[in-house]
Image (cartoon, rainbow over all chains, first blue to last red; front, side, top):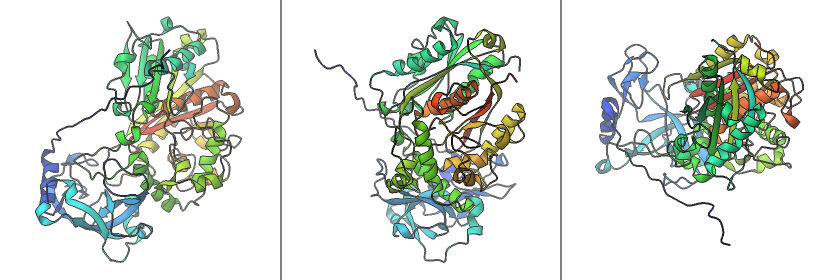
Length: 162
Length: 385
């Protein structure tokens, strides 16, 4: 009597082509130039990043291009201790919600070049780009963020973004 | 609404890290057969099947409803699938309830499941997409920053998350279907467990489970003919919100607040803390218990943790939360929301066994999904509304 077949392993693989659209296309092309481009809403004046061509709150087109600072504030964060299959960063590493100066919604990115225990809410950080010759129309043009050696942002300056 | 809706049958599987003894059809059939038996019905008595599960990548099988139709007795009958990420178990039950309330069908079987052992849900959630940096590590990596924000905003003491982790695991010992059985669980053990996604510790996170849940819903006539006392649906609500919006509050989401307000309005509840006897909340990470207590209006903003600390949410407390052990003890993702809804029904039917809350007459079932984007809730009661 042979053993029953309890499982058969089959890998699943999925590749797809992403149609960026006008807004995301501008954003990605900006990254290829070392610039971070958001879009402002004509009604509420909030700046969205990455831009989507519309304001989800007002429900109107938001196509005014606004360049956002590569510096910002860590609003909140997480220390990851589980190795990632898609991210080639040794654990532990820090993922943070970063509110860039001039933007009204935070982005999520890595904090590096900083001891983990020194990462905190309100920490001021700046983008670290890949070398100029390697800039591409991809989010990976920003390698990570690192402390910018500015004083911490006051809690009240970012609490509404938590 | 043309018809009343009532739960007349509940069934679930034993939840486990790996249910190698059953195939996917076997798993859903185990829950469905128990729900039918509970309702005193056979497959023949069912008019339609509504099935739900989380993203297809969680098992690596596209559109499982196609090959589960026969296992669920749906040949020659309508079957449809609902999908709203982690809240799907709740929204699936609600779609079934709407079919009954709208007078489309008299008896609907609703089933939700996940067989996480057949793929890798954590990494199915950790995909590399071109519109965001590839830095998120699983659901915990997504929710941990919002938990940190809650702790900062509410100034909650650090042990609150651990209190929830211990309470729910002790409750699970009363539930024969629960996946985790941790009789020796203690605050010290939780504190000493590895920090996975700081501030979430290993023992403050839900397990990965295989499991399914099913219910039979019917209208007023069907409930009259049912052998046991039904759980009556007093109110139902779903809400969603965008991924990115200025002022979007992921600690206390607007969609959750508005969903609860709609629900309580339908059920005639003005003071949920006093009028709801037991709450089955979707708490995959311990800190979501105080967060949802606030979002659902059981506590003022920033004070949910006090209900945990004061023992109010214990099984013998004034507002028991997750007496079955909740998602922290069993997490077949797609089924997790329906298990909350089913637990609410069992409680008001007085059939929750060892984890029955004495005198429960009104119960809340709650589910959420996505990045706190989708909410599904119902209130069930022992009395016909």
